[in-house]
Image (cartoon, rainbow, N blue to C red; front, side, top):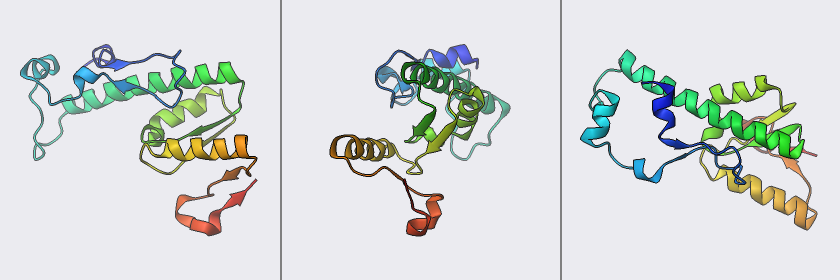
Length: 157
């Protein structure tokens, strides 16, 4: 499986005004794989008890490469549009350490903070905090120094 094959499954629009969306799996691909798609991948769907093979690892690496490209396109676009030196990420994809490392090494942002709420609801937390600060004059708060520290880890700024 090549990166180019996997890229066809995603919409990678770096000019999207929706910066919270990293890559959206095309609606026509959100279902169980058909026999035709299994033929495209060159293997049937792996059963839960089947061991991973180099083939499965190649698919995973290809998907990771496409994700990395999507994240870098969006973060570069965001940096050039805003001039911001700080980046906050939230949601499920934001916990992808490989992509985050590439964003950090890309150097467009001096500081990167990743909201530890692993689900996509993390974006709502950040949006609510930004609106509270911007429109209601509420204080800006960085959630924690560490997600496991609770209130003792709170930092107010």
